[in-house]
Image 1 (tube, one colour):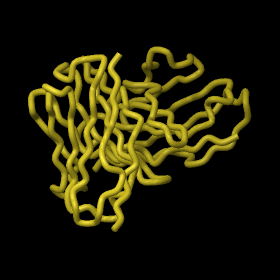
Image 2 (cartoon, chains in turn blue, yellow):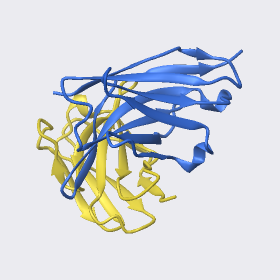
Image 3 (cartoon, helix red, strand yellow):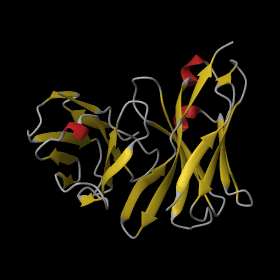
Image 4 (cartoon, chains in turn red, blue):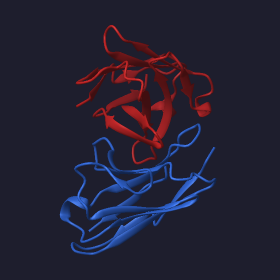
Length: 122
Length: 106
């Protein structure tokens, strides 16, 4: 059973880069059925998809983040990472990693990491 | 972006009740829609995918229906553990988006 665990700093200064890592266990990060994703949620707010990476190296990002985001894969460590630069207070949120699974005509986000709170403040 | 609008945003119900949450999508999604349950401080939990397929291990009192632009999640005989926030999500095209959530309260 695939499990995900986020790690990274809980506090980032404005204008700096937010960096988080998600470790995949219980399954292979090179499984072609998975698109490894990041999702965030401000306190009391809606879930927002940030982007995803596939084992092929293909990436897709949410245009709302205006080119500030990079998601990468390290298969040797069974990890994928998120970098969000030029952060502001509006980037303060709970950040989740998730496995976007696709098979035939079915797609879903499962599993999810437990989430990590990132606060942007000086 | 594709917009997902859930109704109602807040729902008050009692144990044993049957409730239905609706998700309206701004473009035809076929059946590429999923439902999640989220409790405070926790990650979302997948309930239903492909609009109506129950994830393994999810109680059968949960059911989903719909296609195209209108979908619904029904919970029969509410249990205390069901009081949470529910989100719909489309998975047909980019960017992936979620509904605003429906908070189900006792």
